[in-house]
Length: 160
Image: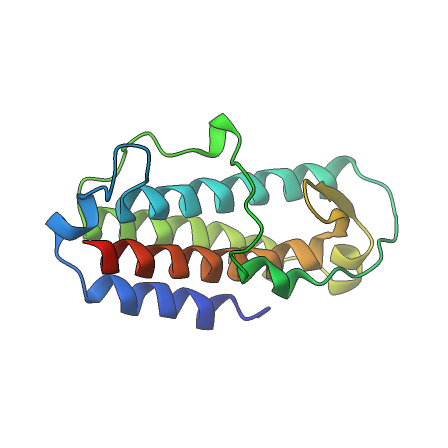
Protein backbone atom coordinates (compact mmCIF):
# COMPACT_ATOMS: atom_id res chain seq x y z
CA UNK A 1 0.00 0.00 0.00
CA UNK A 2 1.33 3.42 -1.07
CA UNK A 3 4.56 1.71 -2.19
CA UNK A 4 5.79 1.48 1.39
CA UNK A 5 6.87 -2.14 1.33
CA UNK A 6 8.69 -1.92 -2.01
CA UNK A 7 10.61 1.13 -0.84
CA UNK A 8 11.39 -0.40 2.55
CA UNK A 9 12.66 -3.56 0.88
CA UNK A 10 15.23 -1.45 -0.97
CA UNK A 11 16.48 -0.17 2.39
CA UNK A 12 16.65 -3.69 3.83
CA UNK A 13 18.49 -5.04 0.77
CA UNK A 14 21.04 -2.25 1.07
CA UNK A 15 21.57 -2.99 4.77
CA UNK A 16 22.40 -6.60 3.87
CA UNK A 17 25.43 -5.33 1.95
CA UNK A 18 26.97 -3.80 5.10
CA UNK A 19 28.82 -4.92 8.17
CA UNK A 20 27.92 -3.48 11.56
CA UNK A 21 31.26 -1.67 11.54
CA UNK A 22 30.48 0.03 8.22
CA UNK A 23 27.01 0.96 9.44
CA UNK A 24 28.40 2.55 12.62
CA UNK A 25 31.17 4.54 10.92
CA UNK A 26 30.69 8.25 10.25
CA UNK A 27 32.38 9.54 7.10
CA UNK A 28 33.13 12.79 8.97
CA UNK A 29 32.48 14.27 12.39
CA UNK A 30 29.52 16.34 11.17
CA UNK A 31 27.96 13.54 9.08
CA UNK A 32 25.58 10.81 10.15
CA UNK A 33 26.54 7.17 10.08
CA UNK A 34 24.29 4.75 8.19
CA UNK A 35 22.84 3.55 11.50
CA UNK A 36 22.05 7.16 12.37
CA UNK A 37 20.30 7.63 9.03
CA UNK A 38 18.23 4.53 9.81
CA UNK A 39 17.45 5.90 13.26
CA UNK A 40 16.24 9.12 11.59
CA UNK A 41 13.94 7.06 9.33
CA UNK A 42 12.59 5.26 12.39
CA UNK A 43 12.01 8.53 14.24
CA UNK A 44 10.30 10.17 11.26
CA UNK A 45 7.95 7.25 10.70
CA UNK A 46 6.95 7.14 14.35
CA UNK A 47 6.42 10.89 14.43
CA UNK A 48 4.32 10.88 11.24
CA UNK A 49 2.12 8.08 12.57
CA UNK A 50 1.66 9.92 15.87
CA UNK A 51 0.69 13.13 14.05
CA UNK A 52 -1.64 11.24 11.71
CA UNK A 53 -3.40 9.71 14.71
CA UNK A 54 -3.93 13.18 16.17
CA UNK A 55 -5.24 14.52 12.86
CA UNK A 56 -7.65 11.60 12.59
CA UNK A 57 -8.84 12.03 16.16
CA UNK A 58 -9.08 15.82 16.37
CA UNK A 59 -9.05 17.00 12.77
CA UNK A 60 -11.93 18.11 10.66
CA UNK A 61 -12.66 17.38 7.01
CA UNK A 62 -10.32 19.39 4.79
CA UNK A 63 -8.95 19.09 1.32
CA UNK A 64 -5.34 19.63 0.29
CA UNK A 65 -3.99 19.89 -3.19
CA UNK A 66 -1.92 16.83 -4.12
CA UNK A 67 1.79 17.53 -3.88
CA UNK A 68 4.67 16.16 -5.98
CA UNK A 69 5.98 14.12 -3.05
CA UNK A 70 7.99 11.85 -5.34
CA UNK A 71 10.41 14.79 -5.54
CA UNK A 72 11.33 14.04 -1.95
CA UNK A 73 13.90 11.51 -3.10
CA UNK A 74 15.87 14.20 -4.94
CA UNK A 75 18.87 15.23 -2.89
CA UNK A 76 19.36 18.67 -4.44
CA UNK A 77 17.13 20.31 -1.82
CA UNK A 78 18.26 19.85 1.78
CA UNK A 79 15.99 20.21 4.79
CA UNK A 80 17.50 20.24 8.27
CA UNK A 81 15.71 17.75 10.49
CA UNK A 82 14.33 19.22 13.72
CA UNK A 83 16.23 18.21 16.85
CA UNK A 84 13.61 15.66 17.90
CA UNK A 85 14.00 13.82 14.57
CA UNK A 86 17.80 13.78 14.63
CA UNK A 87 19.52 10.55 15.65
CA UNK A 88 21.00 10.12 19.11
CA UNK A 89 23.00 6.95 18.39
CA UNK A 90 20.27 4.62 19.64
CA UNK A 91 21.07 1.72 17.28
CA UNK A 92 24.17 -0.40 17.90
CA UNK A 93 23.81 -2.94 15.08
CA UNK A 94 22.11 -3.46 11.75
CA UNK A 95 19.82 -6.05 13.35
CA UNK A 96 18.82 -3.57 16.05
CA UNK A 97 18.00 -1.00 13.35
CA UNK A 98 15.99 -3.54 11.33
CA UNK A 99 14.01 -4.56 14.42
CA UNK A 100 13.06 -0.94 15.09
CA UNK A 101 12.16 -0.31 11.46
CA UNK A 102 9.88 -3.33 11.59
CA UNK A 103 8.10 -1.95 14.68
CA UNK A 104 7.56 1.48 13.15
CA UNK A 105 6.27 -0.06 9.93
CA UNK A 106 3.82 -2.23 11.85
CA UNK A 107 2.41 0.92 13.48
CA UNK A 108 2.10 2.64 10.10
CA UNK A 109 0.39 -0.29 8.41
CA UNK A 110 -1.95 -0.81 11.36
CA UNK A 111 -3.00 2.84 11.17
CA UNK A 112 -3.60 3.02 7.42
CA UNK A 113 -5.14 -0.43 7.02
CA UNK A 114 -7.70 0.31 9.71
CA UNK A 115 -8.88 3.61 8.26
CA UNK A 116 -11.20 4.35 5.39
CA UNK A 117 -9.34 5.76 2.38
CA UNK A 118 -11.78 8.66 2.15
CA UNK A 119 -11.01 9.61 5.75
CA UNK A 120 -7.27 9.63 5.01
CA UNK A 121 -7.94 11.84 1.99
CA UNK A 122 -10.01 14.30 4.03
CA UNK A 123 -7.65 14.95 6.93
CA UNK A 124 -4.72 17.32 6.52
CA UNK A 125 -1.38 17.93 8.24
CA UNK A 126 1.27 20.53 7.38
CA UNK A 127 4.60 19.48 5.86
CA UNK A 128 7.60 21.84 6.24
CA UNK A 129 8.43 21.84 2.50
CA UNK A 130 5.15 20.92 0.76
CA UNK A 131 2.61 22.69 2.96
CA UNK A 132 -0.68 21.00 3.79
CA UNK A 133 -0.90 17.36 2.67
CA UNK A 134 -3.67 14.86 3.22
CA UNK A 135 -2.91 11.80 5.34
CA UNK A 136 -2.88 9.49 2.36
CA UNK A 137 -0.04 11.52 0.88
CA UNK A 138 1.71 11.52 4.24
CA UNK A 139 1.63 7.72 4.27
CA UNK A 140 3.12 7.65 0.79
CA UNK A 141 5.67 10.33 1.77
CA UNK A 142 7.26 7.94 4.28
CA UNK A 143 8.46 5.69 1.45
CA UNK A 144 9.75 8.55 -0.73
CA UNK A 145 11.60 9.94 2.28
CA UNK A 146 13.23 6.54 2.79
CA UNK A 147 14.43 6.48 -0.83
CA UNK A 148 15.96 9.92 -0.35
CA UNK A 149 17.96 8.61 2.57
CA UNK A 150 18.82 5.39 0.76
CA UNK A 151 20.79 7.58 -1.65
CA UNK A 152 22.46 9.25 1.32
CA UNK A 153 23.41 5.85 2.76
CA UNK A 154 24.86 4.77 -0.59
CA UNK A 155 26.94 7.95 -0.62
CA UNK A 156 28.19 7.21 2.90
CA UNK A 157 29.12 3.66 1.96
CA UNK A 158 31.00 4.92 -1.09
CA UNK A 159 33.04 7.32 1.06
CA UNK A 160 33.86 4.53 3.52
